[in-house]
Length: 392
Image (cartoon, rainbow, N blue to C red; front, side):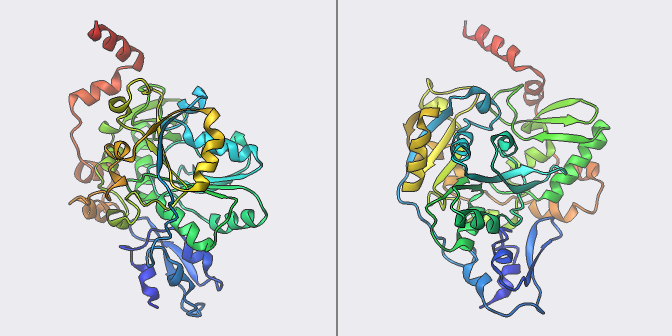
């Protein structure tokens, strides 16, 4: 056994499985210089039992349980829920079913500091916290242990996260539970919470007010797409398209991910969860009648358990059968990891060395084109009128 591998940032995903599985509390989670969490072994407590290395999903073969691959394009029939979701609202349909059956739903939410962490909810009134994409790495905290306790108590548990977080959960549980449903996302990669927090601080300086709410994917102004909504303490609201935002733009270019994301074991069709969710980008090219400006989800069923739960929620959905190859066309991370950019190291090496305003100019620099700027300024209603006029 080579415990030192647990500390290798090129391998570690930061899932926290090793910390939670250690019976001697010999693993402490710390933040590295880039702001990502990683394990630190406390030698005075370690008994060299090997549980951490033996169960680490990064050091061992993936426990793939995919038994099928059935693909759907899905729209939540509840329009309000769909509008509040990043894509077609499929997650909300599945989560509502679990909550209706007195279950527990685990997923990513922004905390009081607007940093992502995994939480558990048992009330529909809290489901809004778990909706929507968060393009920052979420801290799973102690949720693997909490989920195991819920499972052992006989409750239905839905656990959602990135594929590496689901792999960590399954490695921690190390057994099958009939009352567990897992959902993973088609993930590009994750920037660090440190980088995101510095970005929020920069926004607060720029607009001279505290950021009190941040949504990466909001549909109020531009419909289904990549427009963030930022609410400030002085009641100002900003809608910013990804193409003209330094943090968002760098994310889309794969410049700011955790090192391991560029060699991700899970960026392929062999999924680790019962159900995989994604935006169904390009649905208008495959089925124009099913396209909707309020969003469409791609739902990939990987297991019999996934099919069982999905069949129960079908009455709440509009759906059409699709193909994995069609979803892959605009979701490249179903085939391959994101490409590592040449400036990735420079970004994190310079993060603490400059004022963030200067850091953006030199390390997150980009040139938004005039089309993107105008697109961000024109309201959706006016865009619709323009499109109708052009069609005539």
